[in-house]
Image (cartoon, rainbow, N blue to C red; front, side, top):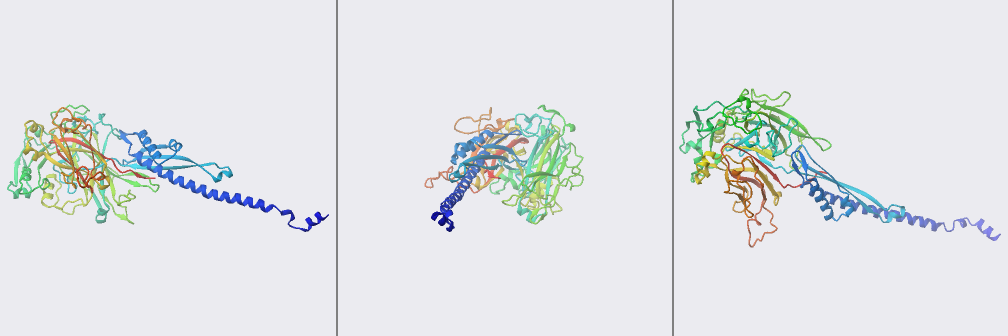
Length: 630
């Protein structure tokens, strides 16, 4: 009864001991919260560690990718390099084994490499609620742009045509004529082709932000876009010399003929030497090549093919075999989701004949009377008017370089019929305000020389993307080489400095690879590469060889190649060298050019002895700096 009484009168009697249960439950909840905080922090730390490792793997792998034809290759090498970088970042073996990857190329030539990896992170405190581990996944995408922007001309600023021009052959001829890609039978150098089987050389026109601040319009001019040759064989040609040449006593005018031999044939080019080159050898005058007019251009194209992919040369001019060339302008639109799309702007088809009256003239398709673009196309005069600080006008939504605000206009040059060579040139810049600027190439050359600055690109630059089809106008003919005119005096006539690419200071230590195709027809070694911002005695590299029978390395000590021996071939192995500027091994107490040459950026220049009217090709890539896109 006492116990019953006490129980019934004590309201807490039945709850004695529950605090222990509550405390135990609270401790479990506290442990869960602490465990959640600790384990979640661990998961976030592991996630950051995995992301850094995956980023490094993507950046390392993308530079291993190579393109052969239209196929992206060496993905397995990229995967191996990516796994090495995962291990270097102390990732567990199961993380390395989980690597998944893919590779692709973009329309503008970027190589993309995507990687993804998983990490099963072991948990500690959360095991009390039955969770032993959690899987985290991280991904990254890196891009790499290996193709170098090759200067399309020595005279990109003013558009003078002198020591060289572009040259593309039609599809119905063989590669031995000097074009490694355009002929349909080009099996030794596979490259991506268009749906109709043609090949396009791609140019891109840099339009800096500074250009757009001063100019609303960009005018793209084409020189001699057809393959018509004048019917001048033994007829005299009256040429005029520059004012500088006249001041040194050369006659203002003279009557000349196309050189005897093959240049007098209508199916061959005809360039007449003006004699002004002799002024560059006058030591006291200190006259450079770019101050004189070395050639008077009478014909620029070659009409040689037989209408098939054979290498047979004809001995007469047949207009039916002339090449038709398509010039197509476009740009890349930046979509809201970060992807890009190609937007076609303007298309002009160069003719087989001279029906558009473009022979030896600079023209602007759609603007120059009679030179009409394809239906539905804009003209080659583009409106870059900006709205809210971004280009609009004819290029709304154009992809803008986030780093410097620059944009690019692209130009595809495609030969789609014929078997001859179309010699041409491209210039881009603001429309000229000088009403006296001539359209004829010879008259324009003289006018610009006599009136410097009247035709200036104001920062717009035409580049060939990775591959440049070139026709050398400056050099000795095969006959002159065989006659022994390769002495000291001849070198002053044929040696020319060709700016190839611009290399920024950030590329110090990177590898440059240069391939040269079909260097013959009077080309002679050596060939020297140097940077215009570095004294040659501090850094330059020369390749040369007197062995005329091959174009390979001649010994294990000197990495030497002979351009003249490589007709219808690529220089093999390619010219490879490292950009100077890495000073890690420099002994400043005993400096050497190889280890102690600073590099702040500059143009890479080739000093080359080309052949006269020799068609050849450059292909240049730079071991670039990969960057993350995702």
